[in-house]
Length: 408
Image (spheres, rainbow, N blue to C red):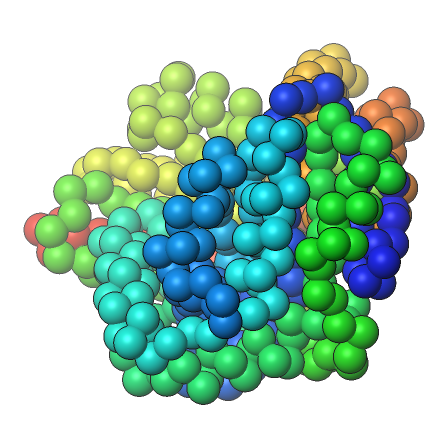
């Protein structure tokens, strides 16, 4: 990974890969964690939508048409800690595609008339989220566990309906400048060719940006039961708070441990006992001070109480019996394979570079990971998984209105 400076002054992360396509994204350190007031919840997501609605020199139709004329696909994504605006285009049309992307990021006008239309799209997305039981339970469980400072990037309907364009401009004017914004690129270009194109169209400003406020979170382990009318399965969530594993070897150890836990739970809860169709442990570290290990399960109502009993006992057995040298080595090789696969996907490389840079690391993420896989010790994996799985745990359950009563 090269860390470059364009003539505008913006930082550019670049890895040269053999591909006929160029992947390029503006990353902005602005996400739901920056929505520090209750009435701001969802506005970073709304801003992401509105940047595509026209600039000082291009209408939204012209933006779309010029992207298509350059064979360019466009996408955007809002997360807890950042927002990204990505294009993918043939190498020979990268200059045209990047010109439109830069104009959109820096010069969006966010017309009121377009906001009146686009807010309905955003509301529809939120309604779809609220209708997806496992996603809704995940949000409710985390919100109950860590308090109102935990906000899902999708937002909420009340705020979107109340918000005006001025509220969206606040985030853009506060965060879309200075050290908060950088570019990540992969493709078959030289660094000189890349900087020439970026220097021609980028309009980065070194102006001081708003600093991120540190959020406070206090874990609440009380059980949570939610009734959602109409659903035909029970959804169950187990959350355990963890700490931030900032060293690369610690992160790799956690990833390998979660892979081991997934295989163990799947074999014992799904295959052997048939208590559910799937079970998914995962780690969350997108918000400092709000890190946790989660396990999500969907099962029939009549098996929910068995799942609630079985999972904690299997977590204990996992720590006692399943962290052998042989099992760890199997998971280590699986993690290596997944990393190799990511290193050969230009879009994944672009994202890995950005995520590592946002975490304050400047080394090539794949070289660092390949070295870390070799060096992470079995005892580190055992220690981290023990730390995660013996912490306080929150049980959250969502059932339908036709389920028999549950006593949590």
